[in-house]
Image (cartoon, rainbow, N blue to C red; front, side, top):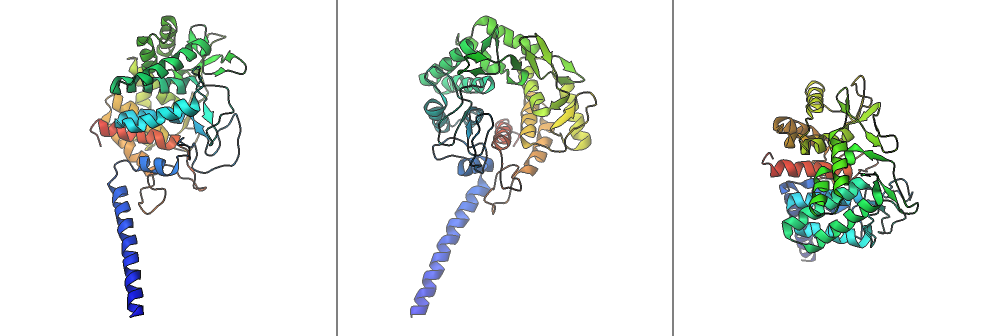
Amino acid sequence: MKRKRFLSVVIVFFSVILVFWGVNMFKLQSSKFPTENFIVGHMVNTNGTLATYLQDSGKLDSDLVQGREALSETLGLWMQYALEKNDRKMFEKSFELLTRYFMSEDGLVYWKLEPSGLSDVSTNATVDDLRIVGALFNAADLWGSKSYQETAVLISNFLTENNRSGNLLSDYYDARQDSPGDRVTLSYIDPSALADMARADAVPAEVYQSMIALLAGAPEQNGFYAKSFNIKTGQYQFDQEVNMIDQMLVAINLNRIEVNTRPLLHFIKKEFNEQGAILGRYNNKTKKPTVKYESPALYGLAIMYCVETGEEELALSMYTRMVQFRVDSVFSKHYGAYSINRQKDTHIFDNLIPLLAERKLYNAGLL
């Protein structure tokens, strides 16, 4: 009798375990966006901020990003994802993180935080601030929140007062040195966010016009765009080794102000169709790859660019290639993650950008 009772208990126990396991597997398999599940399940710090890396490095450096440190870049991308998903609860949590940890009272947004939520940096990053500002203005329009609008204006005012050099917004402002940077990286110019700021009278007209003109006037060399503009010399600057993530961001931003980006589109289409891949970097003169790696983030940006330019077939082909870098086994604890390396680590940028691309394809009715 005792043995039968013991066996019955064991059977019931394992049956319950199997049921829970089956339910969880069903949930994972039925999710259209397993990468979102991976980020929420593995990349969130105890205070709610999103970690940059999956693994904790145990090191801190004010100039480098380590382990579970959190970036304002990540926060802005997560806000954009919440908007694409039309998830106000998700956006509100990000807004709370912004105002609690990332912002000073006068509107300075720290570009990174320690895992604890404290910050030992005194600089912002214009590209990240513009992304956050744009998301806040869009959320205010979508959900009618006055606090989102007011916070967007506060950050905008700080940017235009402190990052301004002449009539341009430089890449960063260092509060300790009370000094802005001396260049504008073209991939950092977000025309949609700047337009939102202009509509809210949160950026001087001359600054808005100068930034848009700087972007619109971006010169090409052999089909590649300039990297940056030196404010002191008044000259655009090119890299000999072209970073394709930068190139795609510039192309997306140019397309949004209706500037022809066909030369770069022709290059990525030709490269992908002939080689089956777009690699991370190319030589500016020869247009030959200088590295052997592919990046799911690069594919994510290329997909978004193709969706916006009506290249739907190319977007779907790149999506097929992009998801080959994703863990698709529901038996893996990293299910949904992109680019898990030998150290069982991954960078959040390589997960967030593909996730955004997937959501945009879904919203466009392509997935």
